[in-house]
Length: 394
Image (cartoon, rainbow, N blue to C red; front, side, top):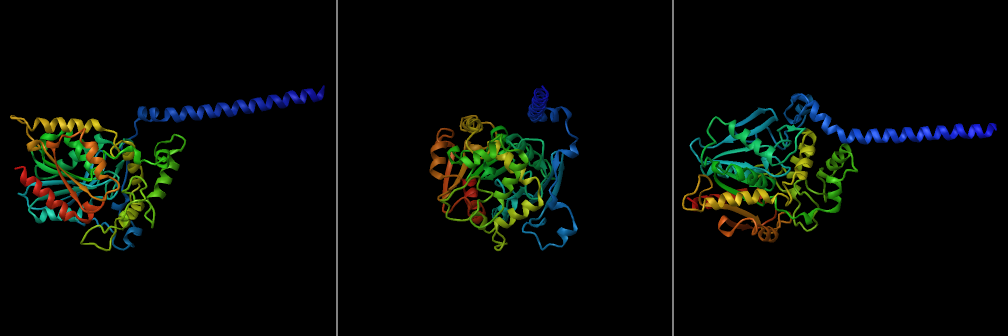
């Protein structure tokens, strides 16, 4: 009888333990699902919604280091623009009466990557503005928003409004976007067409086929089985420049590239500084970089997931090829510059896919020798092609 009583007590304890474990698991699952909703309801104070770029912070450790690969005074006309989304690093220089050109950099490397291109535009008489996208270089990163077309369009408008000169109005400036910057430029142009004098896309993202996404990347970027803290740690490790590793500017592994993107010199003025040096510095000094990288990949600005924006752009271009065109993007044409050996934005694939989005009359096409790095390594040539295209459209 005693043994039966002990057995019943043991079973009761096990049932209670199992019930407790199930309850704890259910509560944890429920909290995980409700946490974003609760956060939205509570709405964090603004000081907690921005991840600061430590690159701007004057610390003893930073003072003891050698000159960074991306100096804060790399270009003239630098300014820090304070916004509700965080501080943005902007540079603006060139003749005050010159036509204005806004450059938008790629997925990972900040605006120093467009150094040669920017300086060539200035040398040719243009006034240039470049800036670090949120979470890159010296710019902060909002940590409670998706890094999608809406956020980047807002950032462009904030950057333009920060100038003492007028960058708004009808056909106010040229926009040049490289890689991710090309996708951002399309998003901006689709709804702010009247502001643009021209648009030049260099190896643009946004139409890269999703077939190029490896199973590993699909799991890493999208799987709900990985907690965010672990996901960010894994991505951080994968972006660390090292020989034979994936470049941060290459969103997925490709074994057919004939050049290591991280080994490309950042500019002709700094031939010893490589793209990988800037990425390594950025990983160390901007805590918003990896989260902004992940959110951008997820928000469909890199791979072909937002054809709708391109179709809106095509409609706007078509309106400007009529007898009574609205202002902006005169002639209803854009300049598209591709690279012959680009393994990221594959020339033949983009040409085929873009036919269903942009008609032949809407695009002036140029193909350069080189790979995805042409905007960095051949920035002067890119500027020359763009200027030639603009002159033909006058």
